Length: 434
Image (cartoon, rainbow, N blue to C red; front, side, top):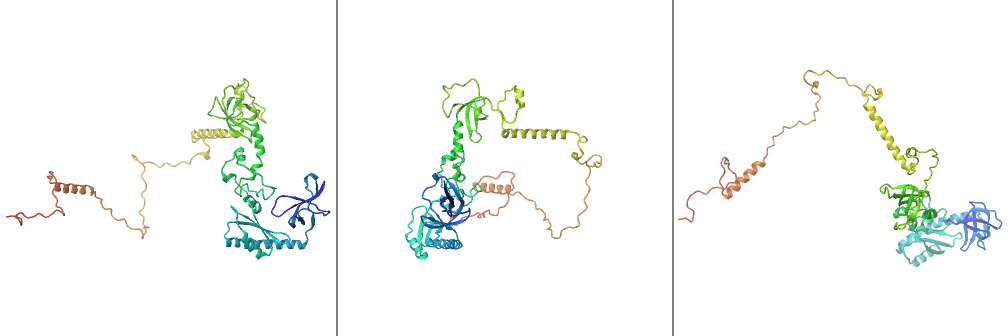
């Protein structure tokens, strides 16, 4: 057994073992340790404890000292320097017209090295940028290109589940995730629903993959030929979480039924032909419903031949429908009762019938003339009679057509003078006539 302390670097979620060398370090305490990049100011997440020798890679780096007041001030100065370096680097990137996005700036504890983390779609030539930054900060400059998943880990955020991102909280390293996991778990293949903040597939798809694969080995595949307590049929759906299958029976293919995995017998797993498959005469037993020792009403009627135990989720809508039907019938019976038999609060208030005069309806009381006329109300103009001029226009058009063609005027038609009738030439000799 080796005595170690667990520390975590800033911006990371992985714990590293260091040799305390006799120092007693408590959790959430800052220490100065020795690394391959020099001295670092880090936080202890777990104090002195022992671990097996197999889990430790020798030689262990050692703890230099517990953080002092000067170490805290130096760390605060480095954080302030990082903010200034971030704004200056963004201006330099815009001046050089480089297609890169600055994500984070880290300054080491000794202050002689500054690391700039950025993302870009391709390779970027930042040699001139490094020279400008080195002339400004008078320190060693290092630019590192990272991926979108590392960017999400550094910046952090809230996932679609409402919790902080897993990569920024507890994931030691990124695990490979494929689209096959989403298909195995029967998830929607819409990229917006199975992608995380970084734009890649969510890391949590890997968490339950082992459970789905184990359940898939015990459950039949779709279109499998199975034997159930109610007969044989094909599997139309599989619910891996509840370990239930949906079967279309040959006797009733239009209404599929759900069965537990213990209530079916697989005759052919997957698609294929039924030729040569022997169907056993004895059907699989039906699974008992937990907490129901007495026979159901349907079982008592059919003599113990209950076709299927309906889950409570499926039986709830039918029960609600029965309650609604009973309520309608009860309301209908109440409405059929005479008014005297109904309770007083249900009876409608009676109207007093006024005496009707002989030979007609009761006359309405004459309203007194209104005296409070509004002076600002405009008086109604008299309505002019509207004459249909369509027939007159049509008759005039017919007369003009007959005059041009020389047809005789029909009898009974009054001759009306026309404004546009051409003037007649007087009878006599023309200018060229002898």
